[in-house]
Image: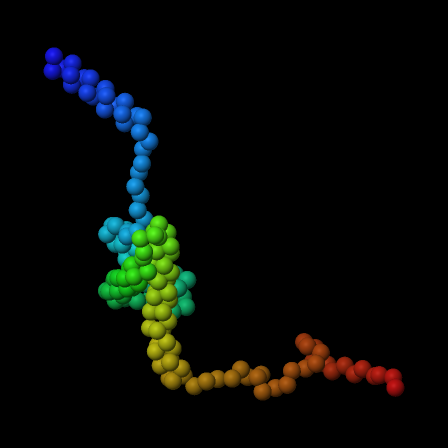
Length: 152
């Protein structure tokens, strides 16, 4: 008898769940710690390995890149979190977070490369190209000057 009641109650539960629309709650903000760690690891890679960014600004040593990446992510997370409101669906906050990370990464590498560029500029005298003081010819490559006569 207990088996019949159990089977009937399972059937009732199954029918009820099939009749109810499934509602899934999906939250994009705040990101999980796993996601934040992935962002930090990607920042470390971007700051410490050869890339388009490093061609212009140079790379950071691994330990410095790790410390810098954690700081960038924490600051961006705090900045994005301060803009969050209950009405946001998370997409806007995630965009702020992403933009803050990008902005802070660029600012960091620029500020780090600026002192290096300044010290290089002080150690090297400025040089003008050899032909910079010579006037350029009017005709281009041949070196000939053409004369044009105009009628009065």
